[in-house]
Length: 362
Image (cartoon, rainbow, N blue to C red; front, side):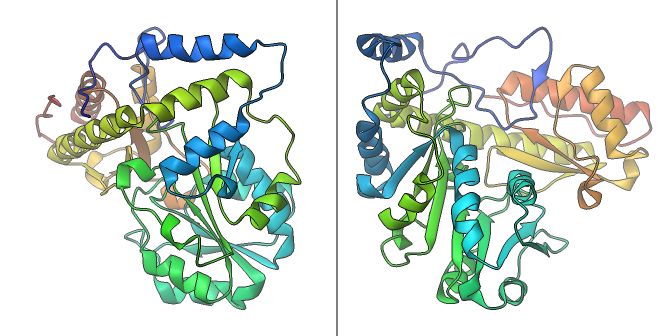
């Protein structure tokens, strides 16, 4: 079943601000599906603890192609990351993170005082196999986290990295938050490797960031370890009801993902035409943008001026490796066009680039 996302399938932005900083889905669910989720919630009532968690596990398992016993829902994938590091992370002598990557893993690891190690990505943000294996050392005493696609760089680490780390005996956590945009997964390896954990979320392609529903896929014995440090009833009743409706209409999420990927590619071409910025290739719903020396000003100033003009993008002031970069989420065509137009004006005002921005089309 196909579905063309209508332009009015969005909530209006707050004020005049264009929010392109959190990798959110710019589309939202049609009113009749939101009403269906609300009706399902009301049929149980807010005075009861959630009673259909197993139904959610079954639906997530069917979507991911694994048995329901291999599914653990979470209050967003963030809760599952905390649980994974709190349980599995204490069983290893080294936790390896490619860098830069999704910073929440480092944040939680440091808060728990875990033995973190980092493998710096190459200049093209690739992760060579030799560097990964050297960082693992004694693989059976280590854990490695691989975000596929990687955030914030947008590239997809090779499947051979996952297999090599598993064969070395390491615990391997593969974060597939942006799976629906890349179309590549390692869930087919779950039955073969007991130390593989796949993290996913409904926040991105499924447009449920506000309701916080994530899920982990792994062997039931592994999920039992995560569950041992998690609260009961961790997914609230309304989020659970909405997730079930969302999964019943997974074709909608797939159609949004296709549309967003098309918007992303047009946005990348428009940015490339500006001259003094470089969009890096991405398999996710965002682009990492490098502010080149020809721009005549640092990325921090570009980001600040964009924010002053009502466009919010993501910048990392404390990350030296990302000092010349910012990340922009892919929005609706009109928001992408506004972003490019304002970026072009900023660059032109400072003598950077003569290209005329190409407005994004449908």
